Length: 157
Image (cartoon, rainbow, N blue to C red; front, side, top):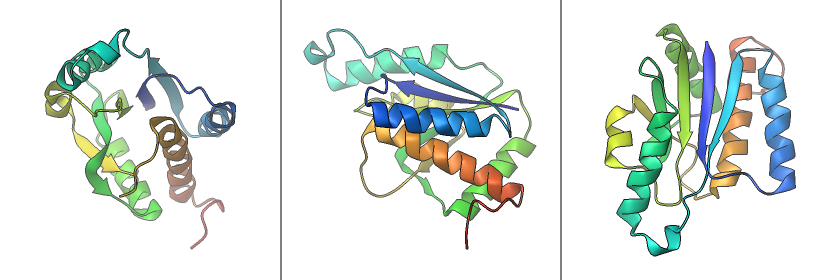
């Protein structure tokens, strides 16, 4: 099974890039992972919020195959403990399909079309984090989830 992490915008801080690369490397032991960065919109400052979400949504959906499960990282999503996330991940993996696409949207969230195509939403916290930090936090939790499923000593109870 392949896992995609689709993100609006680039990670620009070196310490976050280093962290992302570390977890992307670690995840290769468990599954094929692809991080896809969608360029930020040009002239976004001149656009309305709904217009930004719609255009970003179109770009997001272009990166998703019809057979993929689409999980949005969204503040309105379900929160999990790390152990429960690993169980949720296993359930998603068992559902089959070619891949799962986890999506980090832009500053204004997702368009209605992206929400309508999604098969789930996950919230990493009730707190707000920068979109760049969310990528690193999610990759770490994904790695943690796989180590829990494999019974490896990364996660401590």
